[in-house]
Length: 122
Image 1 (cartoon, rainbow, N blue to C red):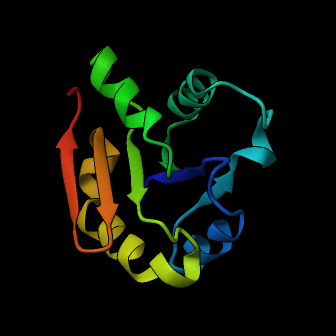
Image 2 (cartoon, rainbow, N blue to C red):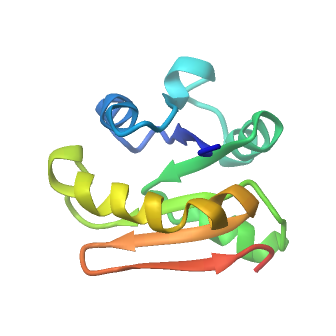
């Protein structure tokens, strides 16, 4: 079963439809939580509801590294242009390649040239 994706506030809600088109369950944080919520609240919600946090915010990866937590998994994009029209193929490829890691606990970083994975805890 594919992991579910929780889109961070720094990503366009349009990502949800793009991901769903490719068979991934996805929801934008603004549809399930307070847009002003802290990163910790978002991480806790994702862990409780078994979602992978999909974000452009480096703080989520940093939190995993500092706390040595085993989840939730985080998919982090590192690019200037983070719109689906530009990154769709790269993100879908990374999701497919790292699906098992994201399901079991990982930080997956996607940039314009590659993706890499760190198994949790870091």
